[in-house]
Structure formats: structure tokens, C-alpha cells
Length: 379
Image 1 (cartoon, rainbow, N blue to C red):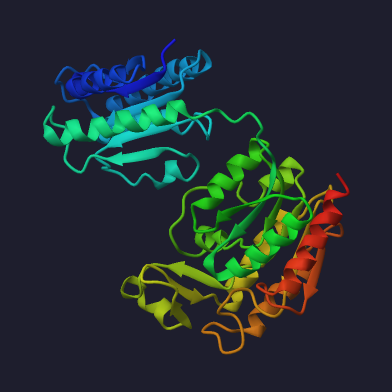
Image 2: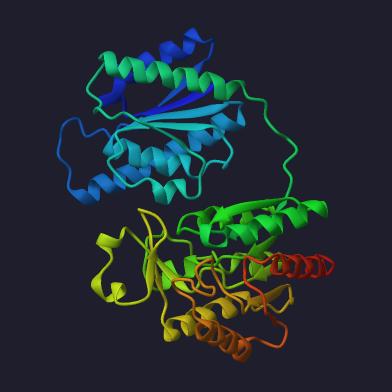
């Protein structure tokens, strides 16, 4: 049994891997090395052949890592550039979410699609892998120290299920008030950032039985998936609750805007709409009535359930912090479009409940908590 599993392409990262093994040994940790080398031996392969070999080696290594974890390994670490880093991410993202994993990488790719669903720790090398030097030794020393700390952490056996709440800064106040109400009633909650990435973790944890219920306060990721904005694939983001039989309270938080990048990067057609700078990195652009109708249709279809475990609460006082009197994207007519569409399309078993308050008002949070308790009583 090894304490740590080390993944690396040993034909190109042998010196770095061996140094890390030594440093871990200095900390009384045993290591199993799994070689991810493709076996090209300097030959330049056609793209299809290389991709097929990467897949085969990754699958074989995944099985070996899973077995090592079952046998008692307490952490996984990978050393990877472009090819190796991609293979290591494939292997790591399929391991249990909470299992300690560290990827030391040159970061030649966008890691967000994998990290959206997995708690993998990244250590960017900054300099490229090129054998041992002062910089690399220092980096691997820190990696070994980190792994020693991770391995020494006690393992929690008492996983509690909680109520998931989707949130953005635009609905943060409402989420905070809701969480306090639930806490006062003995119900724990977990926030998931509806930024185009957090929803992937939400659906994964829901599928794994980690959630008691879902309050989709901020299904803003619908706008990213169907209109515009950065996001990762999350095909069951809005259906997993129904499919898993989880009580599901849905609100249209953040459906009134599209989340785009810095203002200078926003395409001109979107700049013609009402918009505001949410921060230096994000610009929120108001959706059009036909877009709101499309989003309402998709959301109602996803929430509809033969088991009647969902309810849609519509805060007619505003769907986000800037959808209020004097707000940059205030629009009562847009809220009416959502409500009318939802009421027209909702199946008989799906209740659509309009309230006159704003999504960030305490009264809205109280009503949502009440609706959740009613759903919890039915299971």
C-alpha cells in the first residue's frame, strides 16, 4: 500500500518525479508511480493515433489509481505539461470529489471544465518542465509539504446532506437571508456560484446523493447555456433535481441579464442594450422579452415533474439587485413576461407562485423557506 500515487510521463518527467518521490520519502510517505508515457519513443504520431493512445493510457491509469485509493492511498499528485496534464485531469476528475489531489502543471489549457466538477488543487509551474533546477526543486519541495499536510488530515465520515442554493452577487443578499432562516430551522445549506461553472458541481453532488433539496434561487446559467457567456457543459444542470426526486424550489434570479466579460470586450449589439459593470471583469446586459420567454419555457420544462416535487416562486419586485427602482436594468414588463410564460406552460402539478417582493427581500426568503418545508413534508 502506498500513501501517495504519483502520475507522470516518465519518459519526459523522470527527474522531477524521482525528486518528488525522494522529498515525500523524507516526510515518511510511500509513493506508487504510475507511468503515463505513450511509448512513442521520439516518433511523431498522426493526431488520431496519439489521441487514441492517450485515451487508452488514461483509462488504464484510472483503473490503477482507483484501485490504489481502494487499497488505502491517501492522495494523488500529477506532474504534467500539455499532453500529460490533460491525461492527469481526465483521471483526477473521475475520482471522489473530496479526495486530495494536486496537479503540478505548466497550465497550457483552460482547466475550468475539469475543475468545475472536482476539487483538484493546481500548482502552476510558471517555468516549463525542463529537468531539475532551483525553481523546480523549490516548487516540488512545496508540493511535498502540501501533500504531507493533506495526507495528515483526518477523514470525515459524517457527510451531511444539505440544501443547495444557487447564487450570484446579484442575489447574494437573498441567499444570505434564506440561509439564516433555514439554519434557524435546523437545515444546513450550501451555496453554488451560478457563474457558468458552479452548476456543474451542483449537479454532480446532487447525483451523488449529497443534497437534501435544491433552491435554484439563481438559475442564471440558463442564459450562458442558451444565449451567451462563458460556461462548461452541464447537460443535467436543470433536470437532475427532478430526475433524483429532490424537492426543488425555483426562482428566476439572474435570468434578466446576460453575464459577459469586461465592457471593452462586449460586442457592440449587446452594448446597445441596458447594461452595467458588475465588476472590472463582468458586464451584465439585460435580456430581451423574447429571450426571457425562451428562458422561462426551458426552466418550466425542466422543473415540471410527475412527482410534484417542484414549485416556481416569482418575485415580481425584481429578479436581481439592479432590477429595482432606479436600477440599471429595472424592467417590470420583463418580469411579467416570465410570469405569464411560466403560468401558461406549467403542467397541472407544477405550482407557479408570484410574490410582490424583490428577490433579495426578507419576505421572499421567508416564502421560499416555507415552500421548501412544504415540499420536504411530502418525501
